[in-house]
Length: 159
Image 1: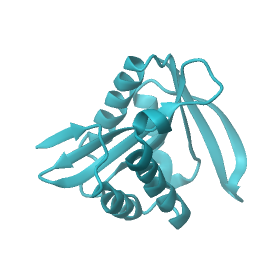
Image 2: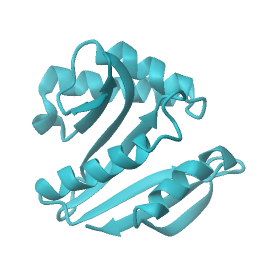
Image 3: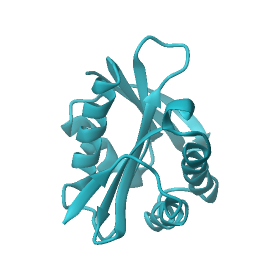
Image 4: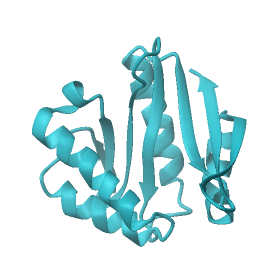
């Protein structure tokens, strides 16, 4: 049975690294960034860092996580920084639950809008479908943003 929690634990450092790497879509640099946000929240707290989490655990195993928070310099706009689901849990609705619960939690923190920056690569097609299924609109694309042939898609939604 999957349970959700919001507070990072020291063990999340390694399990987030493993989970993000196992998805097969994130670079080594991105895997490191995922661990950095967990470290920052463990060191300084979620409120101080602006990183809010949802961790999905099943029998002591991390199946997925999402991280979201306020965008500096904006009025109640939030970014979805991360969402990742273990390959063994993909296709079972966990990504949808994580994103929906992240949106609810962001609203509780006074967010009025949520934005998502993501790759335009073909291996992100399932993520794009998830965002659109939960009401996000593709608001723009920056061609060749991450590298040649890998653009940045911007999704957004008024909450």
